[in-house]
Length: 224
Image (cartoon, rainbow, N blue to C red; front, top):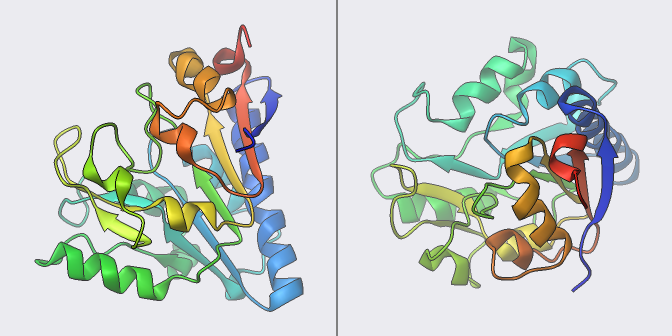
């Protein structure tokens, strides 16, 4: 397993813009080569500025889809939902490219299977974050979802920070053409160091895509 490459930007805003550029470039290249682009984005607070910047870039919007990497099981419009913040970050005219995870369904396992069927086997570009405990997507420590190898989308076995989650699993993430983490803030220094060292004791350290990159700000990368 080859650890991800690292790019360090001065601050959160610069890192977010670099992430937006990666998404935009991946979309343009995919449409030029294959006629359509399939991207995926994670939640958390780090990517809000990234998606805002991305929405203003030169992107073939009519041929681009944006899937969710993970989502909390909560009602539509709930403050906890990644989708709630994604809709706020993107202008209304971009909402049609979002492919929301069906986390309000009664049968979550069937919903996860249906979402999996809507995904391409290979995503052109996937954005991830990392938590202070080393989780990425909703692949959280000590949950059975970490060991799911026969499904590309699954639901966590228990709650994490008060909610169950639907998440892409390692097989889907590892099949990405490009996968990058956006990591900002000094509270991310320890998990970032472990990720870059290929430490498989944290969930993020078990991701193994062919092309992996970390975009970090100086606060997160200090001391590396």
